[in-house]
Length: 308
Image (cartoon, rainbow, N blue to C red; front, side):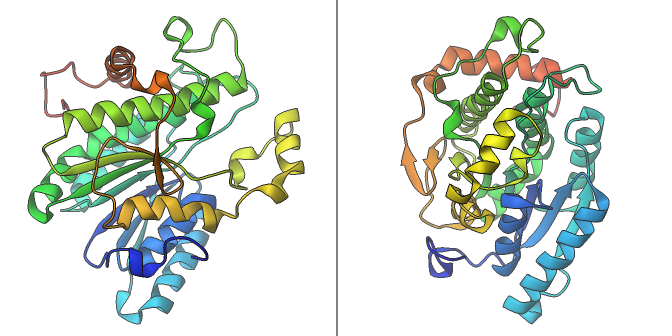
């Protein structure tokens, strides 16, 4: 994978099942590719079937090149994570199709310069960057817990960003109906990733599920697509950014390194760092948890198997 943690620093992932969202391009594709090289059965979650199939062939070829014995070890599942009905269907499929789940990588994300709403009537940045991973993690949590019970460990890795610094959760205008700023929306969603990580880690502390968030660095990916001023500026300085395969190193590290032993941590690439003070606000984390359950239609705490 270039500079950074090499294969010697990573576990043999043979026999494991790893789900990666947004796996058809950028960091997601490179993460899926490396996990497949390490021997994992990789479950790609993509929105576009054609691009997903093309990426699957590339990832499968890389896995076969690393070890021909890996065989057919890359699966493709289609879901638009902006649509909660599709996230629910995806969760049900993953629980039905796989008897174990060792790693969930919540990678898919967007940066939207103009306010958009999903079919569920939710501001799209918050819906895709936070609510989708929140919901999907809850839906596959039983498999993660079962795997941790049998294998001793399972992991949830959520891609966040240093862009969370300087922002807080605007509970009074969570849908950005009064005003919309792309930087605020993105920063808030990335802060939400860390608050979710802290709260989930607290709830699963003794269950063997390691839950961590990571800033992979400034990476040249499709998140900067668009025609607005910020996208144009980002593309202008794209030469300063990491390549996707470099950005994926830190995500793979959290997914597969034996050195990662703690839960509820925030990593800047492969170093544990302190996130912003707002990320340690336990009241905000609990409030966001309750709000997220309500916005995703999950049962109230204690009302069903989805609770955690």
